Picture 1 (cartoon, rainbow, N blue to C red):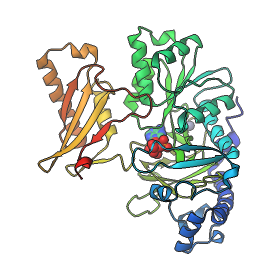
Picture 2: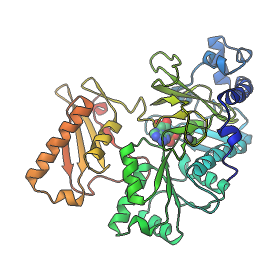
Picture 3: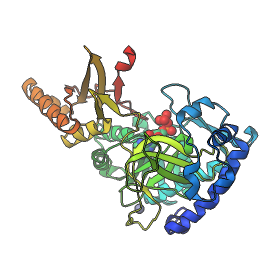
Picture 4: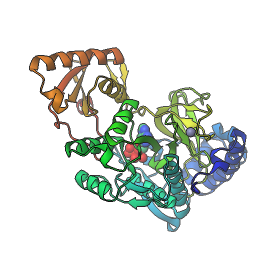
Length: 435
Ligand code: ADP
Ligand code: ZN
C-alpha cells in the first residue's frame, strides 16, 4: 500500500482527530492573529483574543470570513507570511467581480499535494498507474493539484491539461492511461468523443476517474462510468483552501472524506450563522488548520451540503461530506421557487437525455421565464416533428414535478450546445442584465 494511505490519520478515532485539530487550531489562531492584520481586526471587533481559543470547542467564537472579505483584502491582505516565503499563487475562475488570489508556501503545496495523493490512492491508484491529468493547468488549481498528487503517489503523470480532445484520446490509448482526472463535464465529453471515434470502452485502459471542481449528479456518474468503462470518484476543493483534495471519495463512492487533519469543517445556517448539528443541511465552512501563506479561519464556502460520521465501509473515519449540489449562489429563484441546476440535470438523465443542456432565465412582463434547451442524441434526433413535440411536453412535465414550476423545454439538434473542457456554464440568467 502506498504511503498516501495513512491509517494513523485516515482511520483515527474521532477523539484522536479532534485532539490533533485542537492542537493545530490553537497554533493557527495565534499565527493568524500575529500576522494577518485584516483578521486580527475582525477578532478585535468581536472581542476575541487568541487565548480564548483553547480547542475546537472554542472555534465558534471566531468571526467568519466571506468571499467579500477576500475581495476587500485583495491581493495581499490575508497573507500570513512574507511574500518572500511564497512560491506560488492560484486564482479562482472569478467570473464575477474581482478574482480571489491564494498564496502558497512550499509547505502549503506539499500539504495540498498530499491531500490529492490520498484521493488518488483512495480511487485505487498506485505507482504503477498512468494518470492523465486533463484539468486545466495555470491559475486554476485543478491541473497542478492533481499533477502534484499523482507524482507523489508515483504514478506516471501525463500533464495533458484540458482541451484538444482527440489528442487526449490518442495519448490515453498510446500510453495506456489508467486514471483520468478532469471535470465531470469534460469526462462526459471525452466519453462522447470516444463513441464518435468508434472506440469502445474495452479498447482503453482506464479503470478510474477523479472528477470534481463542479457539481454533478449520480445519474451523470453512472453515464460517465459506462461511457469510459471506469469507476468515477468525486473530489472537492476550492482555491481559498488550497484546491481539489480538501475532500475525496473512497471505494464506497458515497460522499467524500474530508482531510480533517488539515481542514476543520462546520455546517452553518446561512441566514443566522448558527452552527448546525451533524446531519443538517447548510453552508459548509472551512478552517485551515495548518496552512501558512493563506490561513483562512471559518471561511464560508457558500456550498450547500451536509456532514456525516456514519461508519464507512472503506475503514476511514474521516468525516464525510455529501456531494454539494450547488452553491447558495447557484440557486435561482424563479417565480419565488428555489431551483438548482442539479435538479434539472437529474431529470434529464433519468429521462434518457444527455447532460448537454443550457438553462436560460429571463423576466418578461414581470414574470420569470425558465427555458431549458436540451440536446438530442443523433438517434433521438431522427424522430418525427410530432414525436419531438411529445418528448418536449413529457420532459417539461417531469421537470414540473421535480421543480414545482413549469419550464419551457426545447429539444435541439445534436452538437448544438457548446461542450465544456473545464467547468461547464449551464445557466444564463438574463434578468441580471435588466437590473
Ligand atoms: P470558483 O469559485 O471561481 O469556481 P474554484 O475553482 O476554487 O473557484 O471553485 C471552487 C468551487 O467549486 C467550490 O466552492 C464548489 O462550489 C465547486 N466544487 C468543487 N468541487 C466540487 C465537487 N466535487 N462537487 C460540487 N462542486 C464542487
Ligand atoms: Zn470511505
